[in-house]
Structures are given as C-alpha cells and as structure tokens.
Image: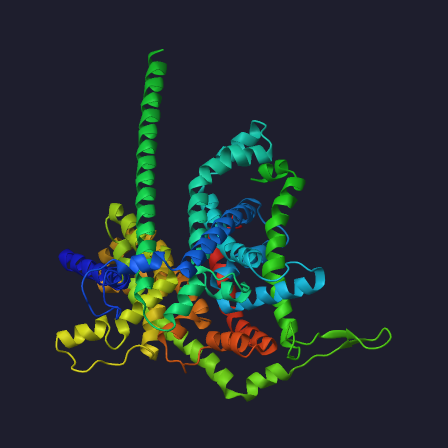
Length: 289
Length: 303
C-alpha cells in the first residue's frame, strides 16, 4: 500500500518536473547548435554567443533593462515594506481595506489594463502639469515600481505576521522610539524577506513586456521588447544563447542564496544549542546554590 | 499590541501610511478613473488621439460631451463579445488543466519527507525566476512542425506527418498551463502542507479507505488553496497577451490581443479604454474574492 503511494508520488514529481524543465533544457541545448534552423541539429557551436555579443541593439536594451530593474526594485522594496508594515502592524484603520485591495490588485490585474491605464495617466499628467515630459525611463520605472511593490508587500506582510512581535514590544517597553524599534529590531529580522522581495521585484521588472510596451517611448526599448519583436518572426538562435546566459545567472544566484541560507540555518542551530547549554548550566548552578 | 500602537504615536504612523497609500492612489487607482473618462471620449487624429470631455463653450458654460459610442461599438461589432467569451473560455479551460496537473504535484510535495519539501518547492518556483517571455518562446521550438515534439512523435512511429500544433488553441492552452502552473502549486502546497494528518488517521480508524479519506477529508480542507490557486491563474489568463500572440493562431480572438491592437495598431485610445473598462467589469468579482482570500492568508486584521 505504502509502496504504491510512494511510486505514485515519484511518478507525479518526475512528470511534473519534466514538464517544467524540458522547455528550458531545450533552449539551452539548441543554443549550442550551429544550424540556423534551431531545432535541426547541425553540430556543436558557440557562434550564437559571439553573434549575441556583437548585437548592439540587444546589449543596449539589456543595459537599459538592468538599470530600470535595479532602480525600480530598490524603490519598490522601500514602498512595499512600508505598505506591508502598515497592513501587518497597524491594526484596523479607516481605509485599510482599500489599501489592502490596492496592494493585491496589481498581482492579478491583466497587464494590458495596467499598462493602458498608466499610459493614459502619464499623458494626462503631462497635459496638466507638464511632467513627465514624454515617455521613457522615468515612466517605465514608475510603472515597474507600482507593479512590483505589490509583490514586495505580500512578502513583507506575510513575514511580519509570522514574526513574534514580543521583541518589538519589549524594545518599546524599554523606551525605544518607534522608528528606532523599526530600524534596530524589525528591519534586521525581516532582512531576508526584503532581500527576496528585492530579487523578485528585480526579476519581474527585468521580464516585463506588456506594461513596458505601453509606457516606453521611442528609443527606450527594454530587453523584453527587443526579444518580443525578434521572436514574433519565429525562432532565432541568438535568443537561445541569451536565454542560456539568463538561466546560468539565475542558477548561480540560487546556488549562492542556498549556500548562504543553509549556513545561516546551521549558525542558528548552533546558537540555539549554545543557549540551551547555557540555560542548563544556569539551572544547575541555581539548584546547587 | 494596543499599547504598542499607542506608543507609536499618530504622526509617524500617518506618514508611514500615507507614502505607499498616495503612491498607489496616484499610480494605480486614479489611472482607472482616467481610463473610464477616456472611454467616453471621441477618437481624433492628434496627440493625444482623443477629444477632451469637458470644454468651455462660450461664457462660463461648461460643456460635457459624453460619447457612449465606444461602448455601443463593442456591443454592435461581434468581434468584441466573441473575444471576451473566448478569453473567459480559454482562461477557464487552462485554469482547469492547471488544477488537474498542479494538485497532484502540490500533494506529492506536501507529503514528501520534510527535508525534501523545500528543495522541491524551490525547483517549482525556479523557472519563474527565468524570463517568462523566453519560456513561452521555448514552446515555439517544441511545438512547430519540425520542432522537438513532432520529431519525437515521428521517431517513435506514432505519426508519419508532422501535426500542426503551433498556432493552434492547443498551443495556447499548453503555454498558459505551463507559465501559470507555479501560481497554482504555491497556494495549494501552502494549504496541503499545514494540514493536520491526524485527521486522516482518525478517518482511517473509523474505517475510511485511503481514497475515501482523500475525498472526504483532504479535498474539502484544501478548497481554500484550490480557490486561491484558480483565481491566481484565471484572472491574469483572461487578459493574457504574450502567449496567444506567440503561440496562437494569428486570428485567435483574445481580448488582451484585441486591446493591444486597438491601441498600438489602430491607435484608437477611446475604444481601447472601453475594452479595458468592460474587461475590468468582468474581473472585478473574482478579484474581490482573491483580495479577501489573500488578506485572510496574509493574516491582516486577526489581532
């Protein structure tokens, strides 16, 4: 009985992961294919990587995308942390439901709607106050912040609601001002959540096509926009090379994060053991005394 | 918590609340009001390509010109309502298949050994960290006529002629299920993982067979996860643009594509706005459900 269930579980996992990973593996394998036909094997070659590095259009777009992603992720973390703090710690207040709705709606809102509405906002603002003048990196960054701060808010809010607030209360009781409590107690504890929120925001910003297409101006084509206009015409081997580079970066990043996390975990366990041992000693000395 | 709130002082609190609040009001809520406004205006060849709603006609007479023509247009031309219905249909079918695939996977992971669970979940979300656009692109190489899948099927002798798979509805379903599967698995796993397994033992003690235990205990208890997962897939899938344009038939009617075409190709901003407003009306109820589920999950006001 148990064996049957184990077999079922293994089978489900193998099929599930095959479905998730075969497309990615196929991208990587065919990036080393010398044939232009992508799926017809013509021998091993790294020439598409060379072609990619000489494609100024792609390189410029990649640079712009990285810049936009870094700025928007950073600002999204600041705003998302504030929103998460308000939702998790400030209890019920007037307008809380609206705020909570405004932070969850961007998670599921179809991007064509968000993109169109942001563009119309920018055009109207330009008519009324003359800012932002035209469309470009500013409008893209504002849009990406709005989209990605929702994800940061969710991450921070769920971390804060899991966190024991007795530490914060203790600091308050000892006379710390609220901002001091936040910077000295809350922030260090939720730092890993902020880090993953930042990475999530960075990735989403780097990847966004639809909203960006609406709010980008001439001359501010991001990487996804360039990729989209290329792959619309069919498969192209240098895009496979680009995908492989992205996958490699993600894999390295995840490996580093994994190692750091397991180290932290071990350190925590060690600390807990030491604390336990110290506690034991204290109890014994009290008993003796 | 009350004492903490009192000591926080209202000033710092209001500032901390106001900053994200104002940002979201300005860049998320007000834009919808503008979309609504422009959906009532008339298209014109200028920049921006629509006529103002309000203008001063002579002395101190404010004229409001509401043009309902865009909405009438959406009703008259059957292209639009066909696109809405088709999008809802495609999103529903894809959500169903996501659930069908995602539930066993989430279940298998949640019942794995605790040390393996985190690694398996990491593997589920990992593809999400690589570009969505490139993962959809990968399916072009798999599904096209001389692509991987056709070559494989010919090689094992299942077919002699390649089957047309790219640019069909099938390809769009595969694309949506593939891209949104992690969004289905995440809430399902979160739910199944924290389930109290002693309930199943109790059911077994009372004479339930394992499959009965699953149907009568596990499945009903996992419904909140099912609901959250389905909404997380369904709502964005209705407005999906990238997947139908890369994998689907060029003539396939999806409302996200229609909106895109109205905006970028026809440059008809008022009609594009009307399309967005009607789409939003379709989605507002599932979105409110999602918001409530999300808030309960994130543990908002339970203090």
